[in-house]
Image 1 (cartoon, rainbow, N blue to C red):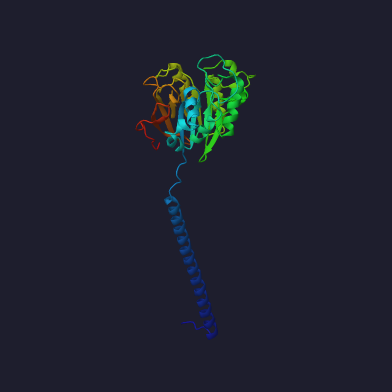
Image 2 (cartoon, rainbow, N blue to C red; image 1 turned 90 degrees about the vertical axis):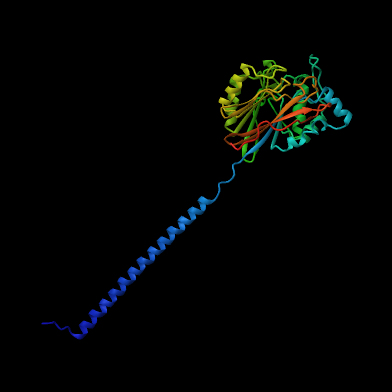
Length: 352
């Protein structure tokens, strides 16, 4: 027998069932909407991640340095500048090569001063103070004064050299009022890359590097140089060591020079740049660093042999991690000792 429900009760059952159906339907719709929202969010996140992944990384920062060899602005070179009334005269034919660099570095072979007395050698140099304007006009930023000629006219001329260079915004490295200053790096920031320069020579008496010396010249003592490099590395990304060393007119480095250069690279230097022999020596890649044993002359009145009639500019691209590439630029000299580019580069800069 089929049970009969009172009409009112049946109506309430139907009403409750309908309400339950609406609630369940709304819940299912909510779940569906949430799933749609979740899927859309995930798709959006994937799209954003893909967009980020598609953005090319920023270009690696780099700086370009140009290194020149011996710059002697006295003797015949000085007389020519004075007669021309042009203190930029020695650099007229090479200025474009220098100005293309972020930093230009060289070796200042002798003091810039009108004071002092010759210390004895017949080969003594002293440049007119007006010559520093030519160095600045050529674009030099850093000059090492750690060499065998900086003392040619005594301590007053050495101090004058520091003052004249500083007045034109050129940093002197490898020498200072005391030993601490002589061993302190010159640091320059180029495109966010901090580059430290240190300078040394083993061609002066060790007494020039005594703790009481004033002014002082940084003597090439390997342990001291390694300590200086370690300190410089705490402040800089790249350390360049400038060395006035070797034997005059010899184009091949000695075993001593190779051992020292390799040890300096192993100790944290990225660049070891040499001068003094007046002729071009080898350029060597070693341990991720670059060594130029001698760049030869850059401005000098020594056109007396095939080897002294040519020199080398070294253009180096560096990044925070070290040397990116380099280019050897051969130079020759006019009859009035002006350097000029003498041919194609031997090694182009590469994207290492």
